[in-house]
Image (cartoon, rainbow, N blue to C red; front, side, top):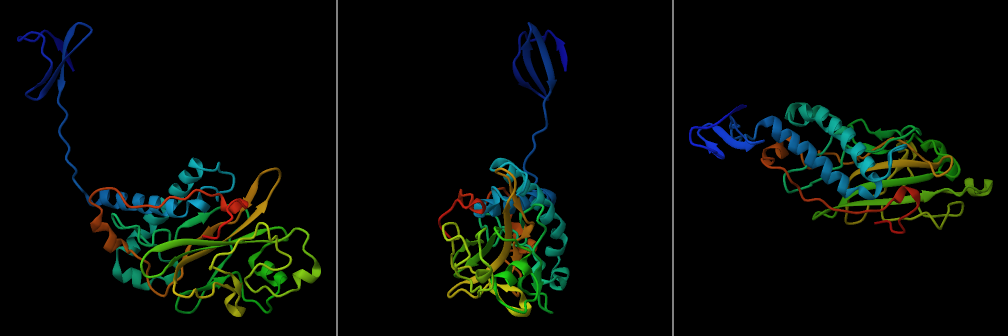
Length: 311
């Protein structure tokens, strides 16, 4: 930056490679910044794809993800946590997803989806949807790496057996969530089983059949068409939904702590197909020349027994 009196008097604006203006009664000039046109570098497109994917996934699953991180303030802070954790997760998986050979070797249950520009696709598949101190319910997969169920192999199908295999306690809330499609669009679906804190021994010994039964809090338990039922060696399974395909699924444990504090389990929305979800990074990346993707908005705090709908 230079000060002085210009030979042409008090000059303002651009002159050649300089910008001229007045400040404190003095003529000041500085070099004009170089014009930067959108270079659309690969690195920039990757960042846009990652951010667009996480933004679309958050909006799609906001009824869960705006309050599913233990110890994190609901709303904007939870959104930041979701974005931060999953940007790292998507970035780490990018080299595999962008390499057809590496992707073919990955277990189907571990594959993540990326959004294309203007198309959210199966965004959310493979992402972290909850974090907390209750640990994580294991996902089970077959020899081909395809997801089958949650928890552990079961010898019986009573309510007590379900609690045992999921690591749940009396009074806990068990929430099963899924991305499903009817071949046209993708929906985020969820069901909530709340175990009554005063459940009896006889009710604990009754059969868990996926519906709301005696021993569950019927005022807070809410079911959609996504259910969780005992599946023997496959653990807790999600039965096929007529006319729909399950894209990804996860199970979250919630437990009331002291005061108004809620404890959570760590949960991932695992790919539930025997193929890759839409889209691979190799397909999605070329569509990201400019930022932006269509997203959906929902606003409920489902994990705290707030939403009366299973949609």
